[in-house]
Image (tube, rainbow, N blue to C red; front, side, top):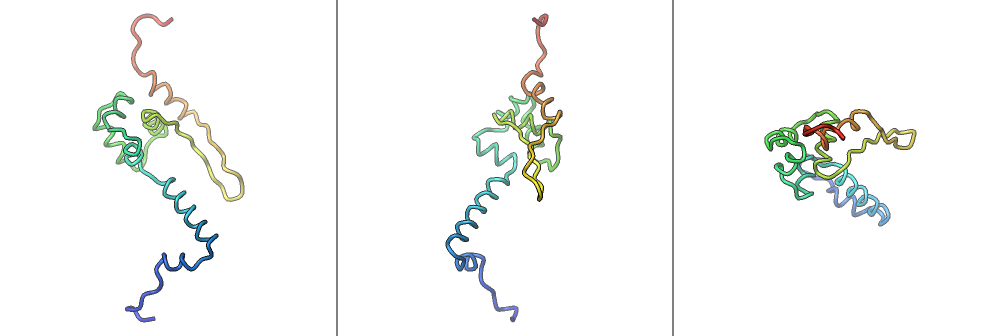
Length: 126
């Protein structure tokens, strides 16, 4: 094949598949798109501003901006961010030879206190 010759496009290859396979490809594509998103995209999809999330975390808007740009963060930080958007963080481990395992960690549980009860109490505890 010469460099100037092009092969079939992905759409053409998929178009030649039997209907059942095309539907399976479409379903999987939809799943993959839904699974992969950034914190910024998720926040925007929920109709929230950085300021609103910052209030939920008792942080400044600039800190939320930095968090959204991070490639790596503590689970407790991620958990707090998700909770501030009204969600719940769930960790699932997937392996080839077994069913998915939902992981419970002390780290995720600790953020409950930080996200919801980090304000100092006034007066004696009841």
